[in-house]
Image (cartoon, rainbow, N blue to C red; front, side, top):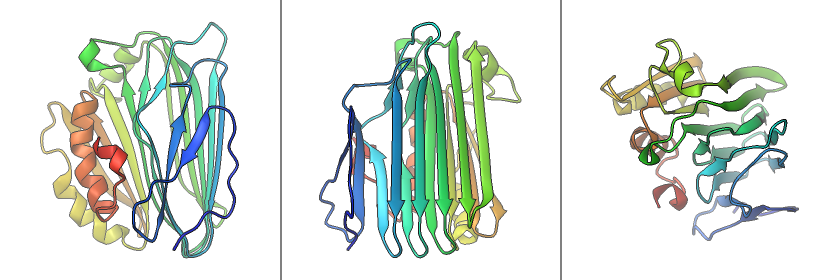
Length: 252
């Protein structure tokens, strides 16, 4: 059984631990402030020790709200996974609102033998509300190291008219939602053949691709017109890659 060794939390960022009746541990991040705006600072540090298994998700989609001029919110997350340990980092969507200003960084350190499943979904405005984003600041950085050497580095910069930038064929092709999925595991090669049939088969409102960056590193990219279509593609993939242990909050 995986147990909590140490826990410290402050401000509006809280962790709750639902009883899943499984030997691994599930933690749910809750932002009691209801969202993020300019000037906010959030720092998350999580370590998974040798032999432990942890799933981290969020209670609901996070929201990046309109910021005051000159104020930029900062969200920094640092995760470490020891040898023979496993981490599922499965936050729900980040929804960007008009005139938001957010700089986000995710750093993950894996020891040899550690396993990781990561997803980061981003939604550009609420399609059901008719929202389009013409003035945003969003800077996102993801870095995964194994044995102190980088194995995955990714970055997104959206400034100004995000709708126009995402409309370009070389960026989003008109997508209003996107997601990155990374599996670092000895099972990555076998998972590639299994997930490809689960990818969107039409290029009209959804698209996706999967490839191996290394024998033990699988990367999936998804684009969709809105958050509903993105979830429709994501859920079967995450179900398969998590071996049907996707947190309940993803299904509500």
